[in-house]
Each structure stands twice: as C-alpha cells, then as structure tokens.
Image (cartoon, rainbow, N blue to C red; front, side):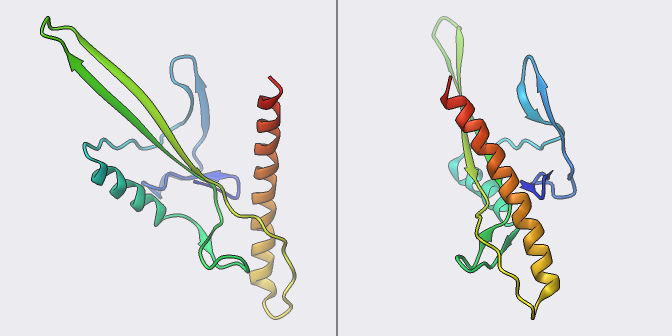
Length: 143
C-alpha cells in the first residue's frame, strides 16, 4: 500500500516505510515485502482479502468506502511440467492487480476543521502520486 507517500506491507502491517529498490536480476522491487505461497485460487483470494481489510479507506462524498491509498497485489503463477525423459520446464507469469486511490475536490467544513485538515493533506498526497503516475504513463506512451 502507498499511503501519504509511505509504503506499507498490507500482509505485515508492522512493516512500514518500505523502500523501492532496483536490481539487475529482480528488476524493481519493494525491499522487505512479504511473499506468500498458495496452491489454490481460494488460498490466493484469502491472502488478497486479508490485505484489502488493512487498507486505508474513508467515507467521501462519492463513496462510503473510498480507497485513500494505492495498492498493488502481485500474483506470480508457476507451472512446471516434467517430460517422460526427465526434462522439467517451468512457465512463469505475473498478474498485477492495482487499485488507485480516489481523488475528489476538497471543500472546507468549518464544523470539522481537524478532520478536514487531515483529508486535505491526504488528498494532496493522492493527487501528487496520481500526477506522477500520469507523467510515467505519458512518458511510456511516447516510446
């Protein structure tokens, strides 16, 4: 989860302020991010739901349970096959499920100034990250 520009492992919530790294073998990755092995679709959904319940959400004018953070759930699938000659081949695929935080215009509510201050700061972080994502997408589209 990326919330207010901090990365947290939703499956290990005590692991916060994680760092993005890049490696020639692994590519771009999040350092100290937990990985869970599952064998069935049901197990994968259980892990997904566990993470979803840890997300930052709040009521907004548009949605009662609006995502206030960005989240990424990566499912890595591996299928191995061994021929009668003893040769094993493995196919690997990755599926990235990404949920971006919602963005909406903020208005000041004089009856709840403390809550509004938090919401405005949160919206600022969401908008900065969405702008950065827009720049990345625009850059990639020009290649």
